[in-house]
Length: 124
Image 1 (spheres, rainbow, N blue to C red):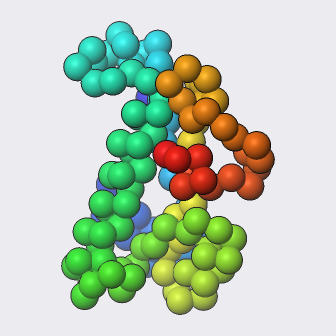
Image 2 (cartoon, rainbow, N blue to C red; image 1 turned 180 degrees about the horizontal axis):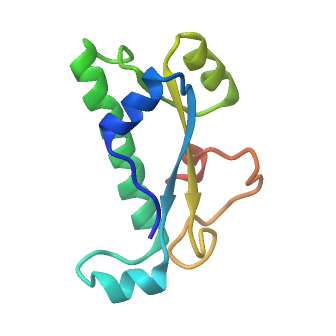
């Protein structure tokens, strides 16, 4: 079980000065097949669903704050994005993945530079 955060807790931490946080899409294929057989257990599907939910949360916050880009939380896809978001006094969220077999099986097929690859470059 990985840690989850309620949106109000994130906002409270932001109000207290937090400006950078990581948010990982996680999956364990073995546990996924045993825990909920109705959901696809493969890493790629899990990543796509969780990243979509993170983006939806950002859109929800933007919607409450006046429109796209106006919310207190924004996703940073590059280090430059993170610096810009933090400079705007917002919470920068760095996305990541923690899975069993990202580059095998049903996962993303090519991954030449994992240290600098973004999720969009991986097709996830």
